[in-house]
Length: 333
Image 1: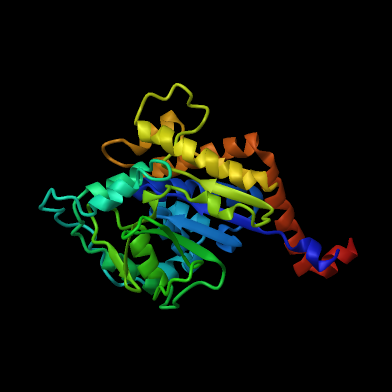
Image 2: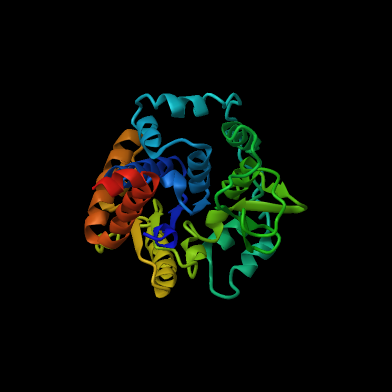
């Protein structure tokens, strides 16, 4: 088999959603890894938005999908994963008093949201007061996890929004001199009205979910062999009778538009979203991360059953990589 025939490429998208999304992603990724043998840490392009940026940075630091799942369900991680986690010595200090004023932080940004198609996230970012909670401890923790290596070698795209004009900025892809992956994660998770906007190269940035909770359209036209999307903030299409939080329906429509752009170029997509039952788990007064991760893993297996092409290509890529790594065993057969 020729070398170029072995080169299959896959994109991975991890969306927003806070601690709920972190548990959701853990279940999704562990199920895909278990079913196909594919290691999400090796994704050729990895996109993270808000909580998804934290998960993306964790994967690129070397923590496996199985370790993410074990952590979510409260079980010990592997020795390899624990060694990486033990690099983190900074305590998280992301809690604190919110804004003490009701004055909108960026009223012009709210007005800009009306141009070129209404984006409620942009309107929200402009209308809420300027956040006051310092998220720099998160940046420090991510950098420690990466052993102070500024950026991963494999394309890692973390999404933020420039507060001055509402433009989506992709750290790791765009020409923005971000000092470290930790600083990019801090910017991507800077929820407007809660966290202080993050200053990078002379501009302030806020949460990438202001533009989109997934930003999967960034993978359109890249010629990938498959794309996996883990979207914790939308609602699965089979929940047609959904009567809950209306923003989930909006996020589903936005995600579908992004999926259509990817598929238009011939790239198949495997998308995992919560159904109404899983949303109820995620929105429970007391978040049970283990239950969410387990339910997300089950939802992933159902998604694989409905959309087999991406999973089949992942399995094939794993098989071909193993053959390439062990040519003698293949010849013996």
